[in-house]
Length: 137
Image (cartoon, rainbow, N blue to C red; front, top):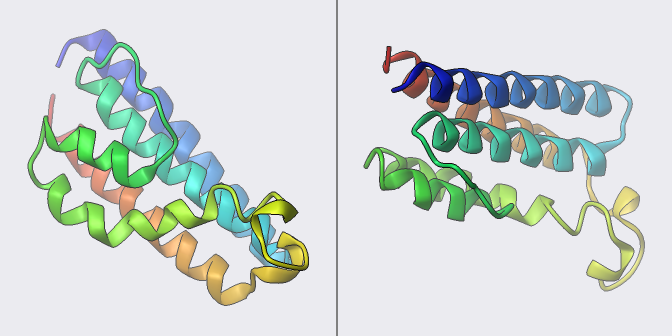
């Protein structure tokens, strides 16, 4: 890994950790829908950290599952992670937009259990990526 690639990966990973901290604060304040979204964002940024750290110049998309699939090209272990974390994708749009739900609003549709699950999956993603990045000099 080139030094500038590693720095870029670490930069994205730091932001992922910040987003996860925000998700935890939002959960404490019972803003569960936004906590779910921020947890998804944290996992997304962690996966992008891995990809940028491996020299990807442009990383597009918001799907955690698709980003994990892209990461498999560099490390086959992401194949095992992908099905575990792919449920985070359902927190990208429905947590924010009333039109994505059949009724009600996102603030009413997501609860503490949803937020805790999203945070747990996000933390799992971040820890996985941290191990992969730290192991590459």
